[in-house]
Amino acid sequence: MKLEVEKFINSTPRNFYNNFTVPEQATIWQQMEVKASVTIGGSFENENGDKWTYTELRPFERVAFKWNRNDLSPGSDVTINIILIDYETIKILVEHTDIHDENSLKQLKEYWEWTLDNIKAFLETGYPLNKNDWEGNR
Image 1: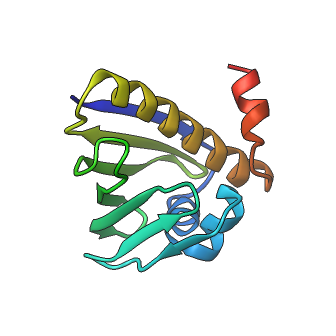
Image 2 (image 1 turned 90 degrees about the vertical axis):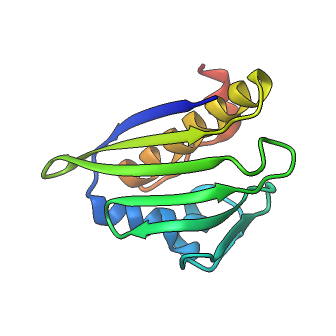
């Protein structure tokens, strides 16, 4: 199964890429500790149990990785494309493929919607979202 989630963000490709890949930046908007070795074959892990292994890093254009979270379609593939729309607007397109089942598809859709809404809020306002508030407004 395949999932696509997209989000328009008032930011630059450089700003999105750096906030997504630099552990110290990701720790701020994810509101939890992030550990990562951002190299091909390097790993990412946070306190939520999200884990992946980087398979492609094209600065300011694309991040791809093998999803390794044991409870949610481990071994599936994720590609995040950063598309410049105009000077200060980007489109983020997340493609998550090889999802194992409908339940995982539903959970991953919510995961990626939350992730993109959260980084969008952080990049546009300087403040991450509160997940309880986000869930209450859905």
